Length: 293
Image (cartoon, rainbow, N blue to C red; front, side, top):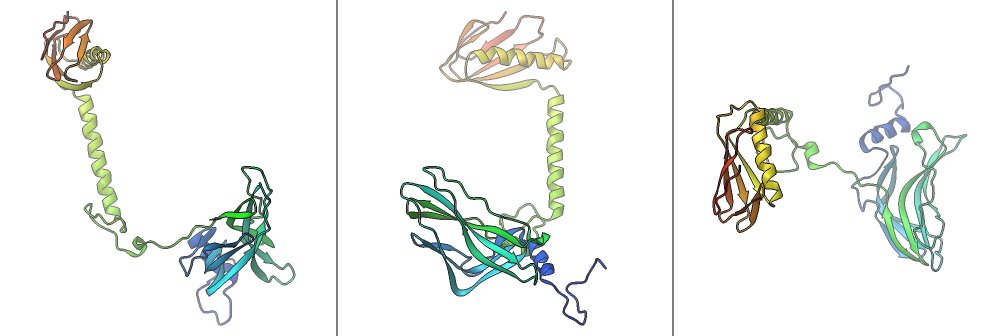
């Protein structure tokens, strides 16, 4: 029979380590340090030793443990003067082929010394669930510079449940507490609001307006703004005798040229009126009179 009841009474011992490991893996993923005790923090003790404090970790669902008030010292091979090295401390899982007995230990995989840019060594990281006899799970990186340990980098993420995992969802759009999730109906409400905004934008694009505004930063943009706006209105079937206005926002005190005509702008804006692309343009400017023919 393939399917089994794990958390149920069967009148005999039947829950296996593999089943419990799969349950853990479904929650914490391939690797995690749990928020227990000192979270397996590492510390440099000497040039040849680091320590790992108490805590709980999970690798492929297998829980490993250092008890309260305990720690484990890990010996590091001496570095080389003038060279760098990267060692990887692994949690090495083993399973005896004959008995099936499993165990773990810390093991150091030494890297290759290099004058610069030392690389991590390769490790035998295998999926324990497949029934392998040995798997090395990266735990931390020890960086050596010369004969000293320069630093230790954790390679396993601390994973814990956030407050919102156990909080009721917020059923409105006014909440400000980032710890609480948004209820599904509010996602629908947001989607409706987005759809309304998109519809309004589409309507605005499809309906020719009788006025457009531009912020002009240099004189070459003035002609482009006027011409593209005129082309837009008449492309949208505006009648030739319909007047529209273009308002150009200009930087005060700057000099601009409209089709080669000089405009000294004083007040910071310019109004242009036009009747047809096939007819002469007529314009007025605050701070400087001009005509565009």
